[in-house]
Amino acid sequence: MKRSQLAETHTLAVLVENKAGVLARVAGLFARRGFNIDSLAVAPTDERFSRITIVVDAESAPIDQIKKQLDKLINVVDIVELQPESSALREMVLVRLELPEDDQVDDVLQLVSGFNGAVLRVRGTQMILSLSSRPDELDSFVEKLQPYGIRELQRTGAIAIPGIE
Image 1 (cartoon, rainbow, N blue to C red):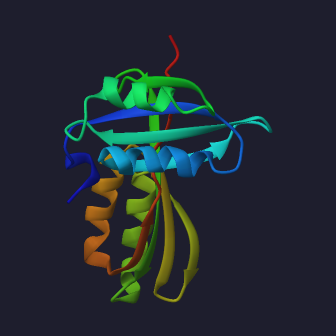
Image 2: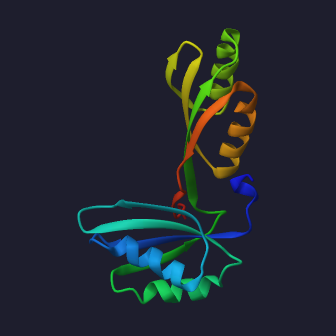
Image 3: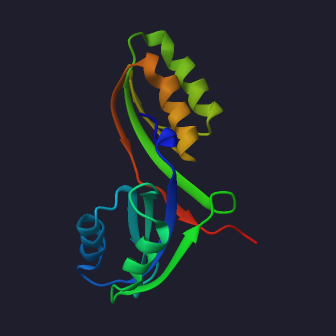
């Protein structure tokens, strides 16, 4: 199933103290409450804080309940629900291709260029490609690569920030 065709989701940007065990407590809260996480990404913003981007299945629990439960965690500093129409949300995909034929390299290069992707490595008929974009664009990119022999694919979780107002 394509990521962009999943059930309705909500995206939360959760600022937390950059301390050991915080991610485990956040994930544990979701597991205990039976909330479904569609995507989770975390990275430090500076030495004191980390931002966790959580995409949650809207059907697993009301978003207000999720926010209230997160707010109870001691290391949570701020919770912002990001609106899809005004926030910047991106995922990344890495794809390893094994092209069935040598003459397909140019076709793949043109396809990657059309999506503003990058070719990270080419060796014979093997290629490693990268694309950072909206989830629906990644879905389309991966779909168009199917005829070229996808051998391995890794997709990140979503990262997002509020838009400029």
